[in-house]
Length: 381
Ligand SMILES: Nc1ncnc2c1ncn2[C@@H]1O[C@H](COP(=O)(O)OP(=O)(O)O)[C@@H](O)[C@H]1O
Ligand SMILES: [Mg+2]
Image (tube, rainbow, N blue to C red; front, side, top):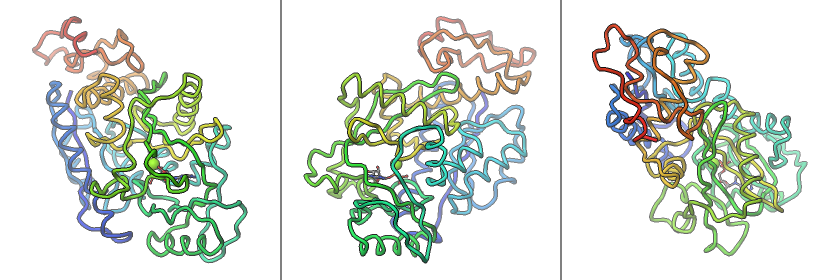
């Protein structure tokens, strides 16, 4: 299949803190990993870096031939433009991997996302969105304060947990001034934290659970994943928040976590792949956030969960392409793509893991190679 790996290049940030660039520049690493993986699976791959302009770099490609592997998390260094990127893909009639504009836009705003989760009766911590200048606290301490529309633990430190009016105001001021947006204030969920990777569409499947190991942090209020914990490898925060995968959980807790994660994935309309972060208090998993188009870094949560499930990184990248192609076949048949023989043969999400790569070379007239035999397909599953 012809795949355009579209990713954003970040040169500088117009807000936040300079260290935040660490998180933003990850996209180049992911681009290389995805492109190499897809090549190893026989796809024809072209990478398209995006800086300020999206239309021009895409114009030369025929949307009927190319599927976009969407790694664009921002454009013009603005995360909130992530959904706009999708508008351009759709305007140009490209098909793309991952979630659509509405899902991306909703999940980007954690307050909005939580309203939707609540409407679906999916447990999530009670919350308020507080913008400057008035603070009318309705929840009891301890509270957790974060930017309402950032990800990758941006703006999250031990000060994010507040236990008094003074601390709350101080942290709100920090978020408003540094991130120039309202803050999401939530009840602090004290308990174990899990990352749940979900793959698929009609029948999403959950990969082995990952848990953050907080065992070396005695204070339960300090058991959080800070920015340093996520990105600065030399820091104690990083060393003391290692991930255990597969997580050791009882069967009943596992079942509860899987249900809440899949419900949340569905409620937000996530497509192809995503990660649900949650914490468990008094036996109930509370959704912290849903990450559509979640980080595909080779060392991040989804890739790790895939590895534990026996899928290499390359298989994961390939499966995301297959899921997207399958989805478009169901909804928007296009002759060149649909003549592939999509037959569910494996336990893969929606049964698409076993489609031979050759199956994507769909245009019978022009495709010289014979269809890949089923035996080859089985080797991938
Ligand atoms: N309500 C909460 N209670 C306890 N810890 C929280 C809460 N919200 C977030 N955290 C901690 O902050 C981290 C980052 O929050 P999250 O909502 O996942 O944002 P991000 O998009 O930055 O990953 C979480 O991994 C968790 O450790
Ligand atoms: Mg998170």
